[in-house]
Length: 213
Image 1 (spheres, rainbow, N blue to C red):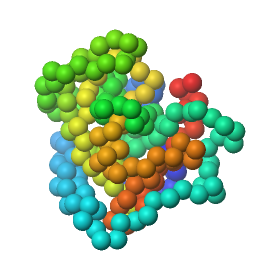
Image 2: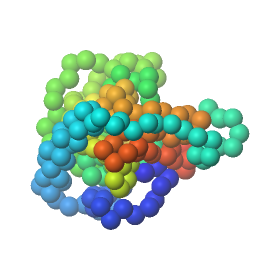
Image 3: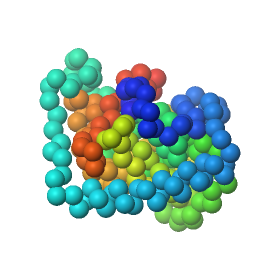
Image 4: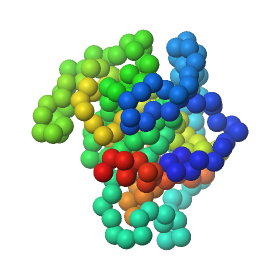
C-alpha cells in the first residue's frame, strides 16, 4: 500500500479513509457489517499465519538499490505508511520498532466508529508521550492488512486506545513487526514480510511525512 495506489480486484471494499485531519470517514456501511467483516478476517487470518510459519519454502527477503524510492539525499525521515485497519484505509501510520505496544489514537478510533466494540480493561500505563504518563482507555482487537494482491497478509492485533494528541493515527510497534515478521529498510523507506504468495511489501508514504513535519 503506502504510495502504491494500484487497484486490486481482490481487495475488500474500503469502509473509509482515516486521514490526519479530523473528520468522519469518506464512506462506510453499518456497524453490523463492519463487525461481520472483522469476524470473517479473524477466521481467515489464523489459518494464513499458521501456514506461513510452517511453510517449507519461506521466501527470502532482500532489498536492492534499484528499489530505492525515498529521498535522494541522506535523510532521517520517519517511516510512515498507509494500511488497512478494520477495513478502513488508515494513513499516517508510524512504524516504530522502539514501541512495545501497538497504539490506536483516540481521534482515529472515533473516526472509525468503533465505539460499540467493547474495550478490554488495561491497568498498565504508557510512558514516553512528551515525558508524561498516558493511561490507555482500553485494548481492542482489530484486523490489520498489509500488502496487495497475492502477497497481502492479515493479522489480528491488539491495539491500545490512547487519548493523547499525536501527529499519527496509529503506531505499529514490536507486536506488529513480530506478528508479520516484518523486515524494515529505512534507506528504502519500505517494509517487507513473508506471505503464502511470496514477499509482501509496503512503501513509505512521502506525502504523509511532509504533512507531519
